[in-house]
Image (cartoon, rainbow, N blue to C red; front, side, top):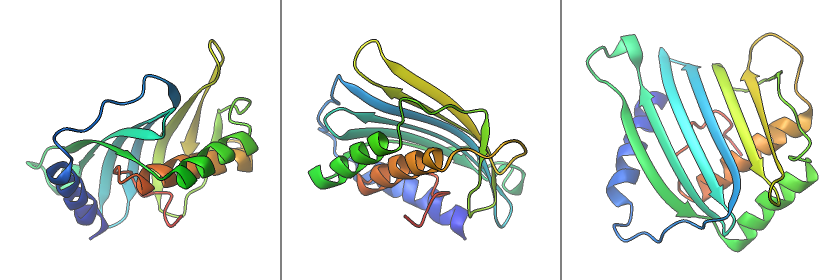
Length: 174
């Protein structure tokens, strides 16, 4: 049921995306790339990309398939731009700062409440040329990530969701 709802929400978001959407800000804040396998009622494969711009805009793309459970279905995809409120964007930037996104490192494991596996890559863009990138595994084996890493990922996913950009929903409820 959850997989079907996710695929339908992707289709609906594509259908209601504004045709004359404003171009995204040229200033980068944070980028996410996730390659996930959600294991609930079969396996759902999800590729997610989020790009949060310095003006609060979010560009997101998501591709979803049910894999062997639906052999002829292929991948459902959507590319959507959105923007949260000023207060929501402030909460995101505060969370990134409070959880020291510029100092975090990967090669660790984050647990999620939804049975899932895969990788999650975060790139934060500071003042040029400063940036930080890290990759974490979901529900795998290895050292646990610092709690700040989960807080960073949840803040990014929450903001993208508030901006009406589709996400994997692995981190819900927010």
